Length: 422
Image 1 (cartoon, rainbow, N blue to C red):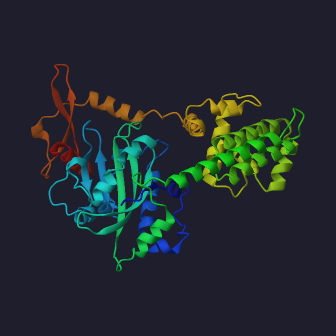
Image 2: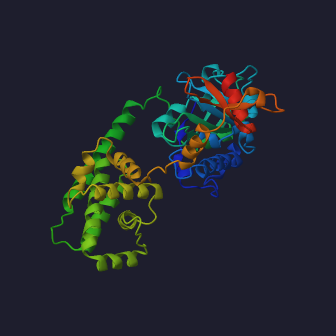
Image 3: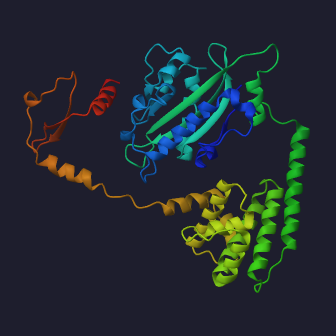
């Protein structure tokens, strides 16, 4: 049975030097975990200020570190995603002999099917997605595996390629007991199986606890009262009390979180009117002001420096978007509750607003201008000792295309061959 979960935060935090907190997961392989961090870092290195790296910068077969364990999905055909590249290690594990042209050709119950099954999550998240699971393959072997899928684009906006890297370990059974690796994975992440719901008593207990937590948080909210003349320290205290209630509920109450963010927002606005007092609070808490990210110290003061950094980043983005939209004092709670996607919608909107305007591609336009005036070539003039050559044509006034240049780029020629011969 597959046990699946995303772990994007592992990559977002760039934990390429971090060791697993639990040594029991080492049998699954610390090297392969680092492989996926390296793959993510490679993806980041290709961004160059864009939302997605260009597919022109990726040549899967040339990436010695990942090539055997990688696969490339191509969505440009508009039909079933093509698989122009499948690494040799994946082919051997999946007993692939024939050509795999599309994901429809991927053998069922194979390791490759585990990787390609998750590609829709990339489309939904529009960001790299990591995953790990265990399953029984086509030979009856039990495998623990980890993988990451990363989006690429041919136009800088559309996700029309996905590059995946996956690694695995075979689990050797020991009598009737569960293998140590599988047990370690189970301890690390509870299994998720929609076909095995909670028992009724468990479900009722969960519901009762959630209701109790929500009522306790409501009571806390009523006890915290601030008038319009409240000082900055009092507003910080109120925001912190709300944040502590969120922590006590272990993040199960969305309303409690929204109330805490609303108080943090009011504290942020109040700090603008009392900069000296705000600077003193920062100094007392050991938090530094950040001119380029003014809401980051606000959420650190409210939720604590040691709070989850990824969550603090989200909170700061949501508050910044409220400020960007001119939300007035006392209006943030209604503002966030009115958003269809709540907190996530505000975070996404702020990140979108921060993205720089795309830089004009002047080099491409200059190259077009030169080729428009270039002399047409006869195919007899093309000299190449290679078996295949890639020729660029230009449409003439009579509607016919004529050659204007030969592209002496082996990697580009190879890519064209794969595309044309698919």
